[in-house]
Length: 252
Image (cartoon, rainbow, N blue to C red; front, side, top):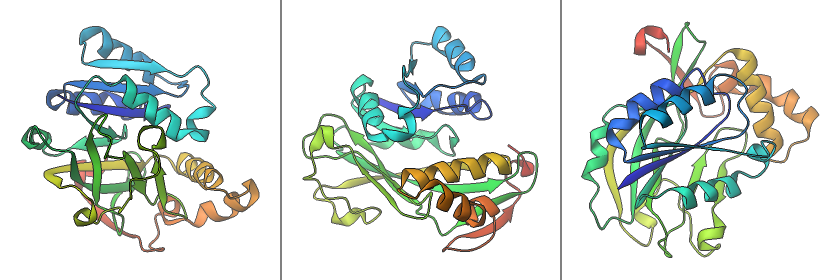
C-alpha cells in the first residue's frame, strides 16, 4: 500500500484539484492542517466523508506548523497506515500517477521527478529552471536503515531536515545523488508538477519572509531580502531561470 502525507494551511486554491488528481493512484491520503482559515478544511472534510482513503488531522496549536516541521512530519508518518509514504505538497499534481504502481514490493526508497512553476493566478506562468528536480521522498515506513528526508531550496539557504525521531542522525543524506545511498533507490519515473509560487505576489512575499525567518534570519533582514528573491520577484537569479510556458493555458 502506498499513501501520502501532506502538511497544509490555507490551500483552498489547490486542494480540491490535488485530491482528485492523486486519489486514483494512492491507497490513503493523510492531511495535517496547521490552522486553515479559508475553505481548505471544508473541502477535505467532504472528501473524508465520501471515501475512507482521506483523513484530516487538525493541529491543536497551529503556531507549531512553521516552528516544528520535523515533529509534524513524524506525526504524519506515525498516523499513516501504509507500507510506503510519499510526502506531497498541496500544490503538487501528478503527470503520470500510474508510475507509483511500478514500485517493487521490496523497495526501500524511491524517487520522483519534479517540475516547478511560478506566476500570478490567472496570469503568466513560468517554469522554474535551476531547482532540484529529483526527489527521494518515497520510502518504506519503520525501516531502521532509512531516514525520511525533505530537501529543497525554497529560501536563501538549502533546507535539509532529518526526521530524527525515527532514525536518529546516523543516516547520511546525499540529496539528489541517488547512487550514494547505502541501499538502492528505485526510480519510479513519476513526474510531478509543483505550482508552489502560482500565488498572488503578497502571499509569495509573506511565505518567503516566514521561510527566511525559520532559517535563522531576523525579521528585518528577512523583509529586506525577500522582495528580491527570484521565487518572489520572478526574475532570474541565484541559479534560477524563469521560462514562460503555456501549461494549463497560463492559469491554475
